[in-house]
Image 1: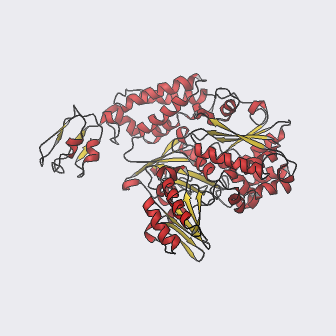
Image 2: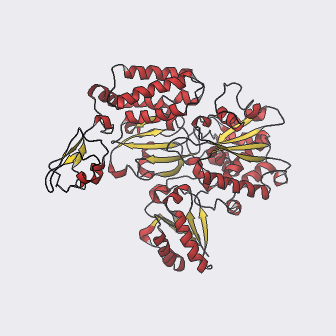
Image 3: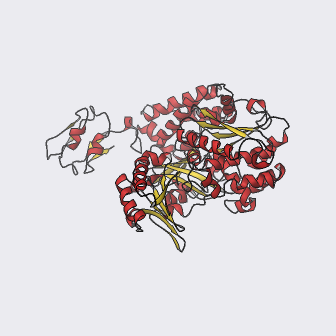
Length: 592
């Protein structure tokens, strides 16, 4: 029987997958022998959602941009019949031919370990996960390995924390294992707060059992009896599927007492966060779980000694735990075949911004920025010029296109002034003002500061005020020197990673795009023609045909002119809403 899968991750649902699924349900219910209809998570092709996949006899055909009407056509021609509708195919795999379809360039270069089941299995089905090899790693860890050999295998794999810090996972586990105590905890940080990042959300929505399995293996390694998944409440679908997975795992004996007859006990609970970015810092996260305000604590003592409720605790993020079962099953030697010597394995990236193919991609560590942007990401939307990538979220930095051959790993990226972060990659083109980018990210970190440190609380506010003045054309001589001085003071005097990295977007844009700051301050110009206070709108008399569309759409009647004659914008009345640009079909309106 054919199997039909509808992508029902957040990206698919936002694009209309619910309607597609309901229509297919209606069609299948009238012909129950025609196929098996299932749901699945995000396969990474967010830019092509909704996605519908048909599997049969080892082949798979994925259709993209599926509307309700197109779903009916696919059912008639591809489910009832055996036709492959070539114009709708985005990816196709068969047993005896190489992959084909419009998105092979996106799919083929990937090496999917963390995302191995995302878009492949039904995330709400434990049976699907087990059929895909799920819990084999746990079985091996509990019945064939000791806590010591689990940790040694993780050390040998070279897996480094995927939350951003890149600390060796096996070493971190060994610290927690080394402290004695009847009570220990395993914590999963799913508080994904970086703008433009959605890796953890997609894993939790598409393969929640892999994270649970990784946590249980960690618990066995450090002898912990309970765990928490700290997930932001803004991820309702991820939380729903996690709850389903936890209940199913308990029922089948993968969680709870005497797991798989091994005598080992472990259970987990979900703690919903309220969206505070600072709770991505582990000690602030612990405080939140404990019912306190999410504020960081001084270290040492480190969490391995005194973490949650001052008990030995191991904390890793979603992606780190999702790697663990694969490593245990396949071995550290197989894992180190991917990536680089110092940064083994793969990394999941969320491609967002001005990139043509926005979505998720998992590639070997050491892949270059250019390969991610142009080969997998499909280049820049609208054919504009690639300008930079913002990596590492608000705590990261901007890497210019001139450094596009930089390898993405824990050694190379910090040399640019940015950080790897959790994997968010916001691509910007030549229409983006880098001063505004710095202002945007600093506004985020300033508002998310918990306020505990004076330099973070007040220093980021002073920096933000300076950047706001500069983008309004009110920059002053000495502003850049003040930004640099404040950056150093904030980095040195802040308690946690939020404050220590908050100045990074400013420092990297100053490092690589100093000329844009100078133009804003000295010339009162925005080179990208993006900052509204520093641009005016004009109509090119050579291109204007007098269609009156711009005048009709202007909310303040700032455009005058007779039909079929050149129109003019009154710059004194113009409120720079850009409606004239979007309504002009002849490209006659421009900024200067």
